[in-house]
Picture 1 (tube, rainbow, N blue to C red):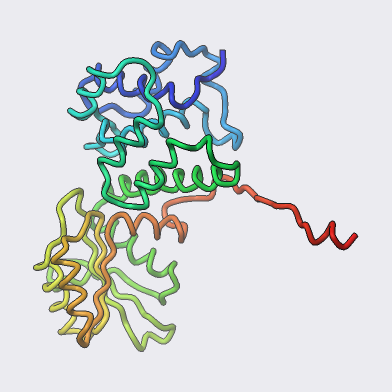
Picture 2 (cartoon, rainbow, N blue to C red; picture 1 turned 180 degrees about the vertical axis):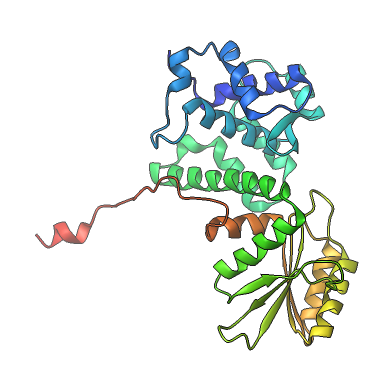
Length: 299
């Protein structure tokens, strides 16, 4: 018996979460899957093409990510999914396999982000796309899943660890040497980076590791004020959560004057970490080629 298709995992994972009634580790979920999907011992050993994890592990992680985006699962404890009230209601009224198109529609209702809504809709019509388009869509979906996992792990580290991560990320992005200064009495400054190799111009950083609390206007004004004793004109405020509309407007207003305040929320932070290989590693690389029509035309 082969490992079932990915969409067969959705209902199994959701039912396991519902029956447990608590947060479960991914390992616990995988251990309960054989009974749900009638998996054999050899099925559990089947590897993905890259040979880096089993197919069951891969499809379980993928299912958790999709169910979470649809609002049927939540992850209150890092790496430990739990069914939501919406997920319980969905199971109570839904029969049979859960399709990608259903999760896509639920995900669109959960998200206001236009890019994600576009990707969710593409999930419904994958069969109408060429292999090249499907590959691009799948790659983007993989990046979104990786970004979710990355941000969940960042939220689980200590505040001081987050400050070190932020300084390392900005250094990887091309800024000069930096150091963490976050401590009692630091006046709201957690890190300082050199914008040039000689250290003639510096960028001041504030890093806030929050789970869900939104950063508001007062925090931005306080950060702006903390630059003054240093004679600084450039600051980066990075958080694992989000910024309120008033916080973003305040940063924009300040940046019209003699200072510049750059805001980076959790979503952008995860994307930057992936782009600059901080906290992630390259697992496998695919080289996509196309026909060189000019070569044949010149023969």
